[in-house]
Image (tube, rainbow, N blue to C red):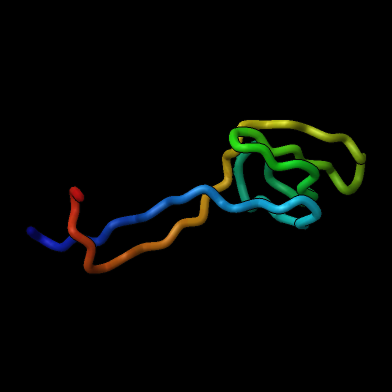
Length: 71
């Protein structure tokens, strides 16, 4: 097996009350986590107070140098 550089994504384990900043995309900006479900997350805008429930979309990313791919 040949080792390759692989980018690994996994969904972020949100917790209610967390303050987050989304760096880019249509939801960029500051948010507070209100509710977390298996497939949905509810965010509150700290300025307007409006809440939005979306499919979970944030992922933590890392690069690994010596990983067998495809695994």
